[in-house]
Amino acid sequence: MSTMTLRLRLLTAAAAIALTAPVAAPSSVLAAGFALKEQSVSGQGTAYAGVTAGGNGDASAMFYNPATMGLVSGTQFVQTASGILVKSKVEDARSTRAARLGGTAIAGNSSPGDIAQDAIIPAGYFVYSINDDLKVGLSANGPWGLVTDYGDNWIGRYHGIRSDLKTYNFTPTVSYRINPMITLGGGVQIQYAKAKLSQASDFGASRLGRPGALDVTSDVTGDDWGWGFTLGALIEPVKGTRVGLAYRSAVKHRLTGNISFTGLPAALAPLLPTQSANADLTTPDIASIGLYHEVNDRWAVMADVQWTNWSRFKELRVNIANPALSSLTEEHWKDTWYYALGTSYKVTDDLTLRGGVAFDKGSVDVDYRTPRIPEQNRYWLSVGAGYKVTESLHVDAAYSHVFIPKTSIALTDDLTGPEAGRGNLSANYKSSIDIIGLQARLSF
Image (cartoon, rainbow, N blue to C red):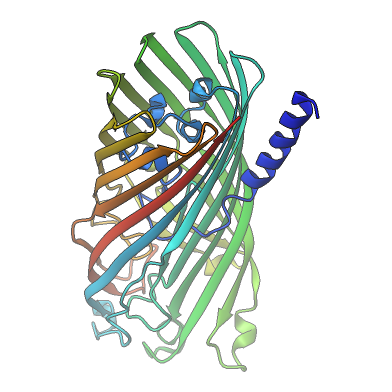
């Protein structure tokens, strides 16, 4: 078998594996907003410090900066799997109707327990070197997602019951080293998004004049394909010191599907038939800068700063075929910053140890925080290790604990505005996240 035939077969096989990578549903929010940072286990070991500059040393860095493919020699395939153990427990929840409706307590479950779901988030990468300067690659990721589920009978059901977003991102990428100092890269994001939103409405209050007499639950589902791009540059002014610059564009979606209703007596069911629905979703654009510096042949230090344009997310609007049923939730999110510092140490030529810390700023103030995404600032502490098993096989493992301060929501209903009739709702959340990652790298 010729070398070219072997490489083509490896390319085909690796591409097929990468395309099946994001098969598990992303779990509850793991970074600011509904971003999922868990796309590289070697990068996780330093809390993602230096990934924009290729500090993790493998093809998984291409998710953060496509120009880092220029660091890969030959052909490389990387497969990651991150196990996410999420706890988000609701405490001290209280809900009452608007004062003009009597201000009575809304009946239901005030202690829904853990609203998050554990999950495994995989990612796959493939890089093929056409020559020393020109590389092509393919990545498959789930970069955005969340799941929160309170159960149908919780006291805040008029604000939301279940929120479920999944994305699947496929990015063909190319990089080119224009001189020994500068490498440029870019890729096209091909993104599939799917969402489900569940919520109850107080049909008794709005139609029967008897608050709490009858609840109707609505389920909105929709999906869409969208596209965007990634751009990056890798600058190495001196050997062992690299600066990475990267930009990941927004991706616009119009999620199209339908809305269905449950809970109505048979005689009233014709009032709310299943009908078409849609909602706009735009994933935010991201700009980042990373630094990697080798102090000596054993020690390296690294840093990353990332800006995410969450201010795009001003509202959650669901448009229904019957306009009277359309809904709007005001969000008013803010742009966020992620700061990470990390280090790595080569114990031997085969074993590398890593560590890192990070601060991930929350994207929404308490005035607009909703039970769908009760997010807050996050503090990362990560450790990891990489081991060269053979000349071709390298494995990585990492563990992170994400500390989350106590979070609260405080929503007021005065029967005006888009959320009229949903009731007053307050609750506290006690949350934490543990992440265990494994990664395998094959090089040829």
